[in-house]
Image (tube, one colour):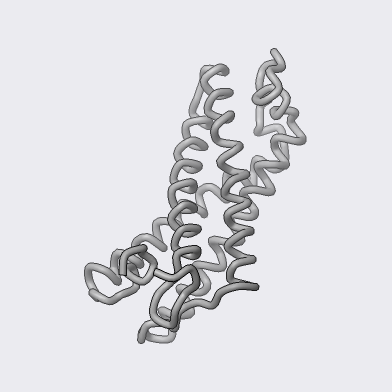
Amino acid sequence: MTLKSTPTAYGAVAAGLHWLSVLLIVALLASGMLADQASDPAAKTSILAAHAPMGIAILILTLARIVWWWRFDTHPQPLPDPAWQVMTAKALHGLLYVVVLGMAASGIGMFVLSGAGEIVFGGAALPLPDFADFTPRIPHGIGAKLLLALFIGHAGAALYHHFVKRDATLKRMWFSR
């Protein structure tokens, strides 16, 4: 596998950024739901202590992916799918980037406006704020649901291509070829 993509497959950098992003997004969605449901303040603080750095990591990975595609690499040629599927895939990918960046912005906004960063990372002995009192909580909550839906749609489409159409869509994004 080469570092850069070829006309028929994604390169190691693109695949690595993709799969690391997948793992972090799954962990972020799970930890976000756990934090939202946690009633014990100490447990919620512990969950947020993991959730926030993972959010920053996915922000950095997403920006790295954008720069990688913009400056250093090109996507493989699309497989012979109907035009509506190609356009839907491009739209879904674009929305994933927008939602991930929006989630990062709203998460950072919540931490900054609420002062939660000092509590979670600075050891301040204050109770966690009620995040619902801060405007970024609304887009963060909506974004989480939208991200989950887009993630399921993206994974579902990949699995459809792999198991139903039996084409190379999923194989092109894997490491062994």
